[in-house]
View 1 (cartoon, rainbow, N blue to C red):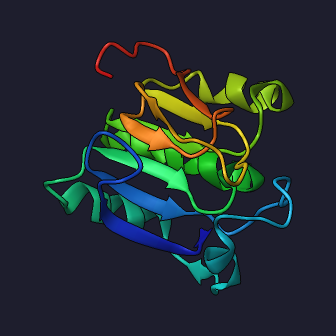
View 2 (cartoon, rainbow, N blue to C red):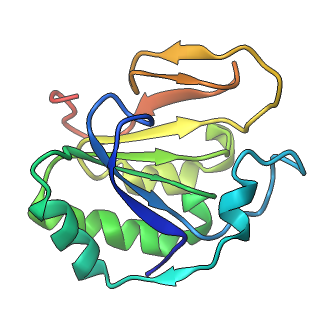
View 3 (tube, rainbow, N blue to C red):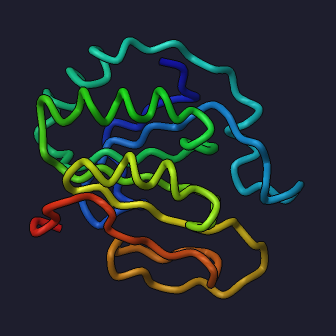
Length: 158
């Protein structure tokens, strides 16, 4: 699976300690003012899915996976395979940061919603906006149009 990188222990994108996976592609729907431009310029790295899951499983701190980076939904097949395999070893939270609006990706949300404990953060980055606190993610989001939604089934743990 291609990624820009992995942060084993991330504490800034979700209320729980998380493994952050930086996905490699983006259609740059936000325009030229990308907040992830340094990530976009970095090289793609090939990871074995099994290695990523072993790395997660061995870490006693992390209790969630956060998929961000560039745009995880532009690598949807890899994202879905990751979630499917992750559910074989854990029911921990699975968070997807997307710049898409909910109305643009109903088909993908429908597929993700079959899995438990899935959260999606929607909305494009808009520069120079006032940040706001998102209760679901437990962090500040940088644009007022951004919000998180629990989409997976049986989310009583969140």
